[in-house]
Image (tube, rainbow, N blue to C red; front, side, top):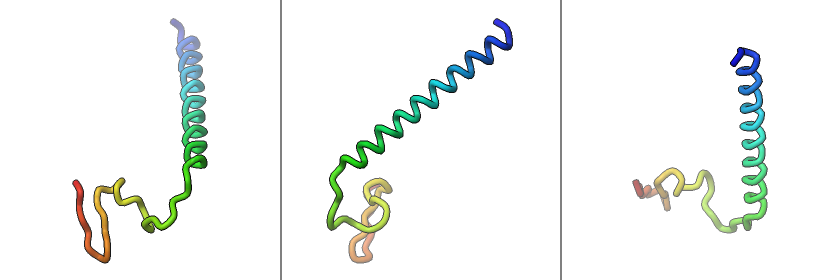
Length: 63
């Protein structure tokens, strides 16, 4: 296999990867828009994602 063929295969693989990533981003955005808006939730980052919870200045660590 020549260098030109290798380069063409790499370019095709890169284009497929970019197309797949764009499709995943579009799916994630569609799911985010379809999700109901939370009312009365916590301010700031999601505490479950970071493994701790804080209520009235007391932090509980779930890890």
